[in-house]
Image (cartoon, rainbow, N blue to C red; front, side, top):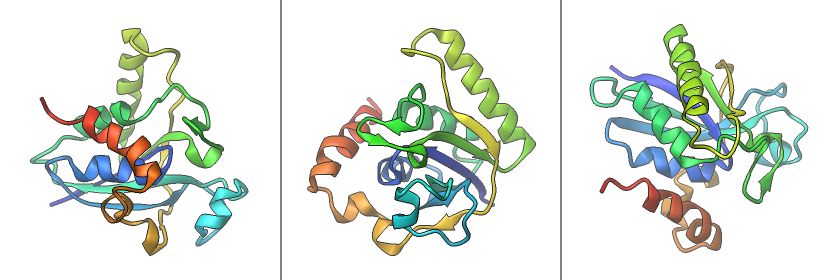
Length: 170
């Protein structure tokens, strides 16, 4: 049995590879969610006119990894205090968002945000959007497994690799 979780945390290339490293995650696809255009393309989403976020759909085995653990990984993999951006990637397509697939996921996401805000460990309040999942559109083939196919590309070396190193178990 697998369950689905959907996260947007900046460029989908970054968080795709982060979730691929998590034991219990059986599939990760990059794509678009939360917008108004059917079958959006990368070019359309990048123009910021579709309302979609770059996101990943994660299929996971709940007997191996909990949704709460996936939330922990998500928040560690990006800065949830930045509105509509992650680093140099700017626009609503790079927003921080959790698209939930059940009432339990909605409650867990809101509780995780409240705990992060209360912890005082972040530079500001969490601006992560929490909303019920809408249709997820799988991104074009060249965006799938991006890091694994391009590990030495400048973006991968400067942005993705440090995230992976930060999240390695000690």
